[in-house]
Structures are given as structure tokens and as C-alpha cells.
Length: 196
Ligand SMILES: [Mg+2]
Ligand SMILES: [Zn+2]
Image (cartoon, rainbow, N blue to C red; front, side):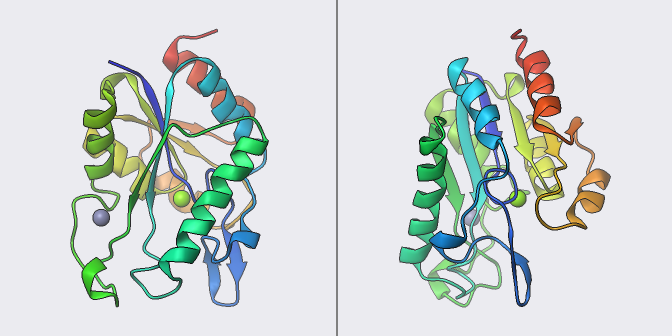
């Protein structure tokens, strides 16, 4: 059984973007920017033979904000930027659904939209992950709660690179660990995975 770092995408790997109607995930590939030094964290995990598994809600297509092609291009850009910085995600799991979707085939109350644990459980089955020895790096309560619902420890990353009121809400989520810098995050991961 393998160990894994599960991580959220928007607000953890790439920054949220401020648009006219507020903060959102990138709506076009050119708006994709990595959260500062996130590649250092992912690189460290890669080097230590721990799986890196992205667990992401992406309801943009369901809500009619972007088309599938654009959504795929944005996802590719995120991974391209990581690769250019020497880090990689082993596998990505995405929930494309939304209960109020305007696209009928994506309108559903699914088991995979965080805070539901569906994607984490699926990854665990497919990749042979020991959930008790794994941890979820997120930036929102829905990440913390998805981790809890799957029996995975949670680490909330409170950086200041995007939405300013996000951190206050995130602090109220009962995460097992909290970090506000790359170095703090790395230290917590080193202790958790018992690697010097
Ligand atoms: Mg997020
Ligand atoms: Zn879903």
C-alpha cells in the first residue's frame, strides 16, 4: 500500500483569479499562475516516492461558464507549469458535476463532489493508497471535510496570494494541521511522512 499527498487544484496548485464578478478558478489557460513555490512541495513529495494525487471539483462546464475544451486546456496548463518547474502530479481526479448545473448530463448530486469523499476513495482503490498514511493539502473547508469523510488527515494551506477572506473561513474548518508558508507545509509533511 502506497502513501499519498492528495491535493486540491484551485488555490493550492494554481492561484484563484480576480474577475469582474469576483474570485474564481482560471477561466482561460493564460490566467493560470502557480501558487508561489508550490512546485517545491510537490517536488519534495515526488522525490520521496509518495504519490501526488489531485482531487478537484471543476463545475465550470456544468455551470455553463466555460466549455469542455477550455477546461481541458486549463488543466493541461496547470500540469505544464508544474512540469516546467520539475514537479508532477501522478494522477488527477475531477468531479465535473454540480447540483444546479445548466448542462443536463452534468446536473446531479454525485458522490464525487467534495466534501464527499468519492474521488479520494476511488483513487485509493485504483492506486492502492493507504488512506491512514496519507494527507490532504487544501485551502477550503470542503477539502478538509472531504479528507475527513475519507479518513485522511488534512492540512490547510493559508497563503495570501489570492482571495483575501478565504483564510478566515478556512481557519474555521477543523483541519488536523495548518500552515501559512511553503516551509511550514514542508515541515508538517516531513513529520507526517516521517522523512527527514
Ligand atoms: Mg481550492
Ligand atoms: Zn461529481
